[in-house]
Length: 378
Image 1 (cartoon, helix red, strand yellow):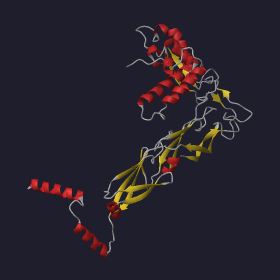
Image 2 (spheres, rainbow, N blue to C red; image 1 turned 30 degrees about the vertical axis):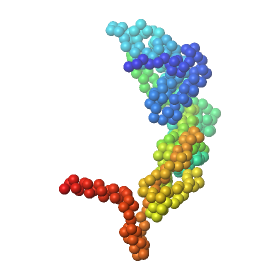
Image 3 (cartoon, helix red, strand yellow; image 1 turned 180 degrees about the vertical axis):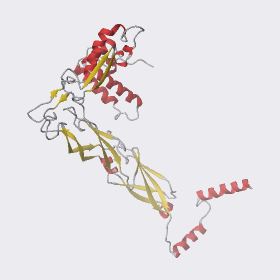
Image 4 (spheres, one colour; image 1 turned 90 degrees about the vertical axis):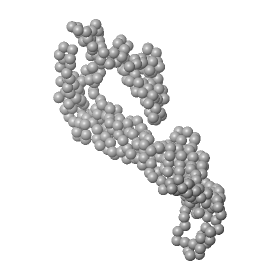
């Protein structure tokens, strides 16, 4: 297994970079390698995960201090592989133990008495759009039932005029630990149920939860060229976080409705245009619609056969976030007439009797192959 890259190298910053430099570098790289901008690119997805992992460590002063001192071994558990008869932390038992306590404290909710806030849940909304809307884009209003911060208590969960208290059992950590040697057993605090706080006087509106159920109306811009299954992310529009924590995100998944005329294939469109056998035989022209609301004229040459395709450049779907467009393919379907009159049937039989050799090349070629086949079989 190849060694992991240094987190500073991953974010392309110097070891002494401050928080603003780290944040700027992270945003630039995350935007460059985001999966939504690199669909199907496994390397970009791996790079995106590495960038997030590096930033998650370096943005935190305590985790960064542990990484600067011990590298990746501060987090992969290798510092716990001790020698026989010695401490499981080897020669670093004292120093690393202190750093580990700092990191553990951070995971438990920060310093003593700190308020434990949790990020809200991400939400999903399925939005069905027509092919015309996928072509031109649209602004849609959607209604989302979600949890929002309680207004009377400001998300604190306590009745206005009062405030939550730090849990005396866990000192605001939300968890309690029992240590035996080098092993720690942790569990959620039973007094505060893991929140780190005790609300003596709960808010009457939210009953101490800090959030209430509410339907919100949001505006969504669907850009031209979107495809089936693509998603739009609205940052911070998900459910409210507990204890005043940040909101989650809202993900809008797009689905395209079936179109009565066109079938989509990536950026290209296909349609099937029926023509009479007279037009196919003698030639002519037909008009087909385009998704921009216009019409395109297609010249049908004399002797056009069923299934022939005509290629109209630039009449397909827009390519997302570019000025390019796909193409439109029109397939000719020669229609056999029905409900013929007696006179029409007579004329067709007369026409059939007057047809010279070569008038029906495909049928004649097929019959020739059949004769060869039957001759060989005999």
